[in-house]
Structures are given as C-alpha cells and as structure tokens.
Amino acid sequence: MPVAEVFQRHGVDIRNGKCCCPFHTEDTPSLSFYAQGRKWKCFGCGQGGNVIDAVMLFDGLDFMEALQALDADYKLELFADGNDTSVIRKPRISVHTIAANEQTRLRQIREDALQGYYYYNSFLQRFKSPEFASKAEECEFWAAVTSREKCEQVYEELSDINL
Image (cartoon, rainbow, N blue to C red; front, side):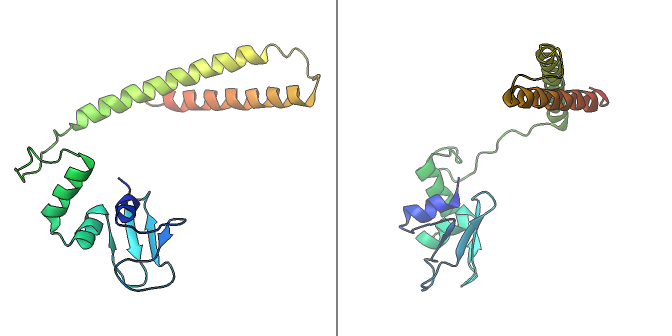
C-alpha cells in the first residue's frame, strides 16, 4: 500500500510526491516519497521509513499496534482473528516450485515469440516489392520487420536455455 495514502488520511496535502512534514514546523515541502511509494523521508527533520513507521508516528502507536491499525483499516488479514496478535504466516513456496513456474513462464514467452515471428512473417509477405504506395505503408513495413526481428531474437535467446 502506498505510504502517501496514510499521510493523506491524516490530512497531509501531497503534491508531486512531496509535502510539508507533519512532524515538525516548516513552510516548504521537505518530505518525499520514493521506492514506488513504499518509503518516505523528510530531509528537514530526518524522519523517514515505511507505512508502519508513518502510522506509529501519526497515531503514537508501537509496532504491533500499528500493524493492527493497518490490518483494521485496510483489511489485510494479518492476524488469525481480531483478538489474536500472532501474525499469520503465509505458506512458503519451495525453490523447486518457483523454478518450475519460471520455466513455464519462459516456455510461454518462447511460444509467444515464435507465434509473433510467424505472424510478422506472414504480414510482410503482402509487400511484394520495395516500392511503397505511401509513407505510412513504408513505416508499417519497417515496424513489422523490427517486430519480427525482436520476436526472432527472443525466441533464439530462450532456445539457448534448457527448458
């Protein structure tokens, strides 16, 4: 979840990924959001962190209380039930499962690249001569050539990998 959402819920006005830090007095924005909106840092007072740190500071909570507040606000289902403070452990995925999934994904990309190559080959066959009726037709031709070459390159690179 973007940490900026927590700041906005607490009345902070964010513009262009920056805002005035609510944790000290200032007139110019010195707090920035980064890492795809998961981190924040104030270059005025030095405060910073992630969404849990922001909730802890805004609401004066400790770590577990902040997790419970986020769980309640965003329905994250982090805890076994409303009263239990033990965090639910998600099942671990084995390295073999990850490798098998990646192998399947790469096979699919290789298949798609081969299909794309055949598609662009058949598309290019409609151009019988190097003469083009218009500039748009010439652009379409070269775009198809480039796409066919990219498909061929992806297929060849993935063919070198033992899938």
